[in-house]
Image 1 (spheres, rainbow, N blue to C red):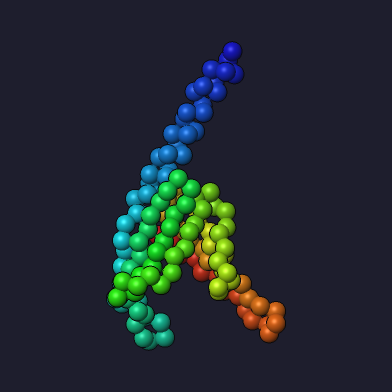
Image 2 (image 1 turned 90 degrees about the vertical axis):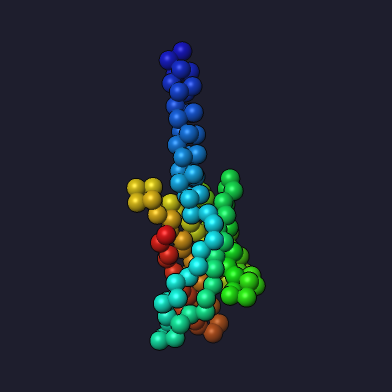
Length: 126
């Protein structure tokens, strides 16, 4: 009887905590623009905007050029598991750091053995 009562209390609490964490991540929803001062090798990077949307299991990031053309769309699983892209071959992962209220997006570009090429990993903190 005590176990049933504890389960009846703990299960809704765990589900409630999950909903609260998703709502906090959902605060990142909306349109975002890259700062103009971002540069690479002394040249400004092209202006882009990101549209960030959440559903029950994924976060979708859609990147658009200044002209409004979609340049890429990436889906991240909220459970932290990898998503894959074939061209270029990349894996994507989202991690939520609840203590810092930060989303960490990780992208790994897979290298090739023929001809030998290095891979690349990028971590972005929001």
